[in-house]
Image 1 (cartoon, helix red, strand yellow):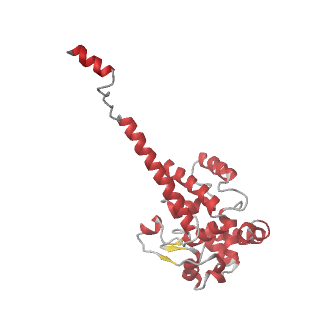
Image 2 (cartoon, rainbow, N blue to C red; image 1 turned 120 degrees about the vertical axis):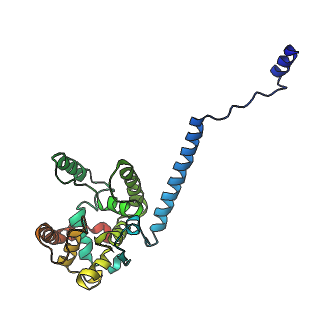
Image 3 (tube, helix red, strand yellow; image 1 turned 30 degrees about the vertical axis):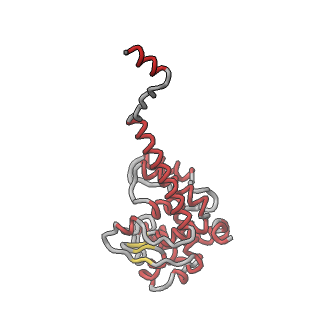
Length: 244
């Protein structure tokens, strides 16, 4: 009897039992699906925000102070503000493709000496973080920031990156965007900012919660004055990518 069954099995009458996929195979399949979903969602969001104003960010959602913001197109932001942002935050904005290797290297060298940790983030990187991610460090966030930076550099271009940056950057406690900042500090529109006023706002960008825009003293005042002096140079050489 056993010989007959064995013979029938060999002849194909009894199909071989299928093996259930192992845990490793299931995990790989799930990971592949998750990665594909993330890639699709991230690209879709970047494409949408290429044309649609960013309604809210994670930083705004979790701001305990409440938020004040007002989106305005780049055409309603004084060119002084654009130049001041480039002069204060990213002098090579028009030259790089999202990452300034020299700035990253210098920041790393300074951080090895101890003291306050400094970054080498470009305006593109800051925009990617502000719009799509959360504040703080960590390798995961840095990796995601790099991915979104590549996407916005490719899909948005410099003009849109600058427009979004100036609308979502924190300009004070609970204040987001240069329009809200201009109204808060100078009681005027961002379209009417003088070179010094724009420079003061740009000087506060890295630490808007602790750097005063009006009545600035010490480092913030000195840094603002330096930025104001650089504006002319920036306008002559570095902001063509925004206004071309």
